[in-house]
Picture 1: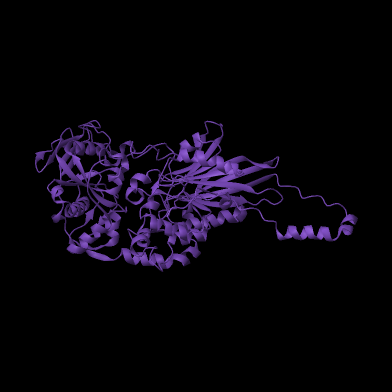
Picture 2 (picture 1 turned 90 degrees about the vertical axis):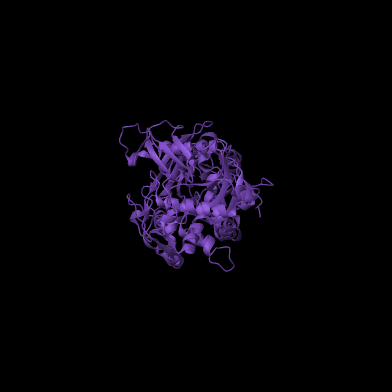
Length: 605
């Protein structure tokens, strides 16, 4: 059910007269003679300067502990990072101890309840929406850490609005999204902002307005969950509406938490009129903002400044990576000028929690939930006849990717109408993880979850031969151009055009070459189906995940294509069910080499 916009009194708590002040007033009134005999008492000098901090996390993706559920061991990477809010909580305690509890606010920029096996477990296996179910571990951890606010991320909507609303009800802090509106009333579906007070002895409180903005891409990426229920206008548009409102409420500092990157880019082409990564545009185009906590793009930006076009004032931005890798720290200094607080200095930095221990209280609160998930991911579902690795999946057609394709095609084929079943069926899928490996022998849930790390569902969409070739040409821009006769280095071959692994689709069911010596747009060669060249007007049913089907990564034609099949079942679970039903995973059942890289017609590998 949509939430009506909250009025002013819901956001700003009125000041109360303290008991001490009442007592003092009473004593003066009761003994005027005594007061007259005493020397006049000078009023306490007002504090003219004050400082406070806003600490920020983002894209935690349900990383509570420093643990890798896919590998069933403590997390580690080549850069020495740690993950999880349990370590970040220790840094936050240190900041509060050093600066004073009354000097610190704590904010998040979204993508909280999706991303690990723990997230999936409490959304699907033992969902928090069940009667009597425990609270979401992220709600427990963040309540313990005393967050003041969090923006909604796009992945908050992956499990549906019911799960999100339940999570919201479990949080002791508001989930903010000024640009998530009820589709019918166009009123805020979530709280747009909150106002916090920093208490200053002998001076007026410092009022900090915190505005939350989420990602317009939700309308595409989670279309099945939000269509007809919510709409998501642009960040700039909504910030222009609410920042003046916060100033009108008397906020001395306006702080934004944006689930949106800061480079002005969009991954969905022209499918939406609103920019995906718009935090820099918000800073530039909306006057009255002091600082922005940035999220969504999983990068570390310790400190970044954008000058506002209208005021010429600098807006300070910081993005603390993801997964609890970093903690952003915004430090503000203010001066009381004619009864009003003015920001005189602001700085930002990121702190690394990899040198501190996990918060023992969070461990105590959530260790049982963690162990429950560890037991779940180690559940055996079948066996595999040989080791299947994804290490070379970004430049070779490897059997582990054909496993995904086979499951997608089998599932779509079983659900097609009689007329659509007569059409040729193919599959497209991306190599989400180069470290994924399904070992020979016992296969567990974690082995499959490590290969298919997202909670995507499955579609069947219709494309013509010409559209399919456009689709594959778009995918082929993933490779840097390497002239014929030049050695190919796989370390530098991929991720051209900021086109990342999760954006790169390969196809099964058709055969084709990708000529990396050719210019972008003319790389797909020898596209055939069953040995015959694909005709421009030939119609295919394409098995594809919902993210891509709804416009994710900006692929041509697919978002507008006719739907032949759709399902709410996660592809990962379909893969688990496939192994469970067969008992054994054997690449002889599905592995076919149908695409390859070439240079001027010569195979690279």
